[in-house]
Length: 196
Image (cartoon, rainbow, N blue to C red; front, side):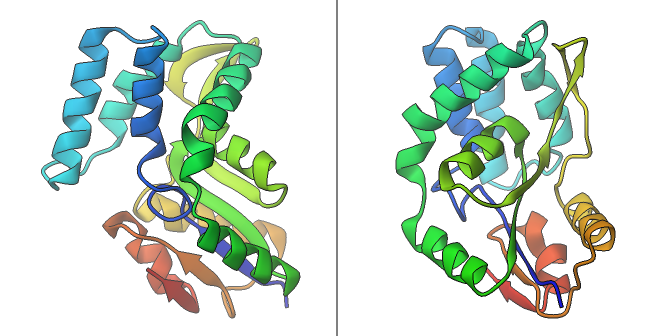
């Protein structure tokens, strides 16, 4: 039986919200305007207070900042962002848990509504796991500033997890899911062993 661990990133593997940290990083490096910074930060504030639930609209607004960037620029930015703002926020206890499960034969899947470039930088640093995350759209190697994949959030997080299991020969029996937010509820309910 092929077993899987689905691990959320923000608030589980990483202390805090990677996309909020990214916003500060982009602003500090003059990559987003003050207006965009305030608009997105205000949304994060309302999100923490549970006043807003729709993550898609604010993402569409924020991701326009990447319009016109080449893939190489994006990769470089995400790697630098990881080293300067995320690496020290990784939760060692979660990493050790995932390493233990990996030794027991589990496939580790980092599943997150965060940008795939951020999650891939985390995966590359750890040296294991697969990534299911929000991808940006690219045409001829240039970012359009649009979302290019399903955003793994809420019901869509469960849907992409189910698709992954079906496409890769895994089973829900014996599966583990780590999450910390109401948007993880359906995935946690579906897993054999939910950890919240």
